[in-house]
Length: 134
Length: 134
Image 1 (cartoon, one colour):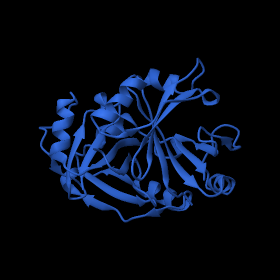
Image 2 (tube, rainbow over the protein chains, first blue to last red):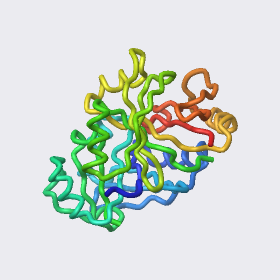
Image 3 (tube, rainbow over the protein chains, first blue to last red):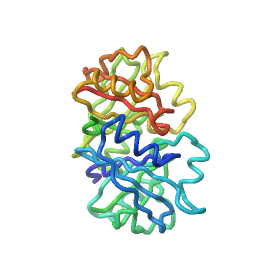
Image 4 (cartoon, rainbow over the protein chains, first blue to last red):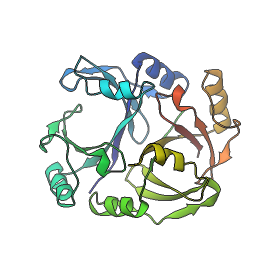
């Protein structure tokens, strides 16, 4: 069912510093910051040859990243995103297997403009998993 | 400098359950467990079309994963691994940029039989980064 690893999302406490470091010390291809007000984040993509790293930085007072950074002041890996062909079929299969889908269970349009769902980290080895329909 | 994302390593509290779940609920291609006594871990690779997930489970009393699982009983993402062409050149560049390399700074042969180094998580947004020469 799951396909490619779409991205690894890293919450960062200092977006400019993180971008400069990945560009300079790690020699990576760093994109421009994009504000996503509907998701309460500013995102920056690091393009790797086979996948992406997504920096997440809080935008606005209700950012879902704010609490994470309070608990993890240095930052940390926030979630990983697997691609699926059919997000509703994926949800039904996961629910049948006893996994919990976060929120009301309905796919939302994610930061990439595609339907996404998040799965409960406690059901998946402590990892927050995003599923994105591609 | 960094190339492909070689893998995302997830420490898991129950290896059999994690493998069964990824095979069944997530429909992924799950490999056979491999004991790596030199590294104190049993590993299982989940093959995705573009990269790998590596489950880590403690092997032996001195496993480097044991403390992580005590702090994170549900499991969690332990590290991410970026590929580099020349690990010594990568290390020199990182040290020149002020980043800290863990251990004595000399590359070791990692669980995949290739030279690896780990970078200090506090220098990289709270993420433990492995560099692997490919």
